[in-house]
Length: 65
Image (cartoon, rainbow, N blue to C red; front, side, top):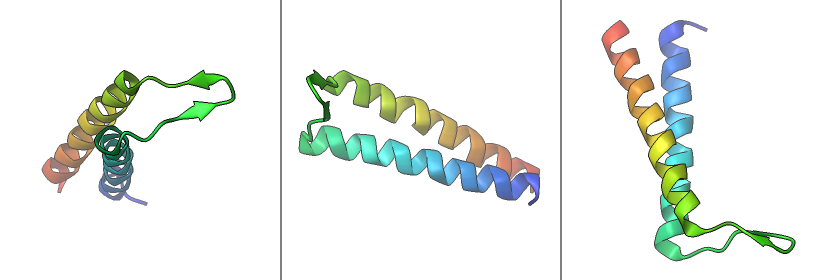
């Protein structure tokens, strides 16, 4: 696998994670594991950080090709 292909695949996976976190926020889906519940603010971070990684990977792939 070339570096460019790796960047595209990882960028798309990070983008998928970001979209899923945004869907959780938009739909108000709860995340509970036993007695522990994940606050919605973690999904905002879960959308922001992978979203930035997605943009970085795809931009780097675009510039390398």
